[in-house]
Amino acid sequence: MAFDAHKNLAITAVATAPSPPTSGLSLVVTAGEAARFPAPPFNATVWPASAIPTPVNAEVVRVTAITTNTLTIVRAQEGSVARAITVGDLIAATVTAKTITDLEAQAPITGTWTPVLAGDGATSGQVYTTQTGIYVKVGRSVFAYAYINLQVKGTTSGLLQIQGLPIAATAEIPAQSIGSSSQWIFAPPGFYAVGGVVGAGGTVVYLRGVTAQGDLNTNLTTAALKDGSQISMPIFYLAA
Image 1 (cartoon, rainbow, N blue to C red):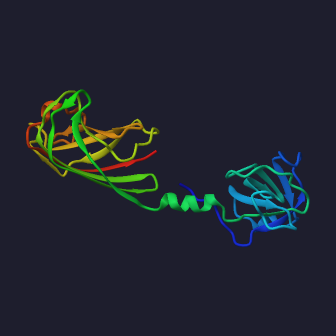
Image 2: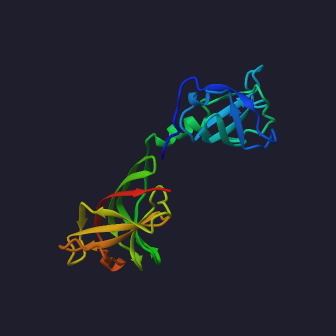
């Protein structure tokens, strides 16, 4: 994601108020002082010059454009209430909750998940020796890993999947290739590795066989499973 631009001491006074004062979408600031602000878009706080800003007397607006000394704004941002902006009010590009949450959204998030090796049809009677899943999410990028040791395959049907991804994939991309496995014990005949795709908005990996030519077009079915099947797979995809 793109962060809003920032500048220190980006503050000035309102020279011409919006019209109407509670819903107008532009205002003019003190001549020559619009240059104090960063490049739009950014959020700013407007409040009376004679008071400290509070939830009662201040409004957060989003500045979407600056032309000379005229600021185009979107009103009542971040849960604030539109107020009557008047000449002499102060407007400043302050640190708001959005500034912090934008940073927090980029901080790595780590966790565990429980991968399930099954079909997209009915699945029952499976017994696992190991189901290990870990992940790191940085922004919208998810780096996950699954290791599965299926002691008893049970009864399964349909296309073969790794189910239970910890974070849903973005719906912007129809199918994301997640690469190939580093280990597949009791692999289906004719394949040297197994890759897969994550569907739009999905939390499952559809497994596909990888031939010696690197072909990823063969969907695997649950017929590929055996008692004792093991798979170790790195999974990288873009989240919603």
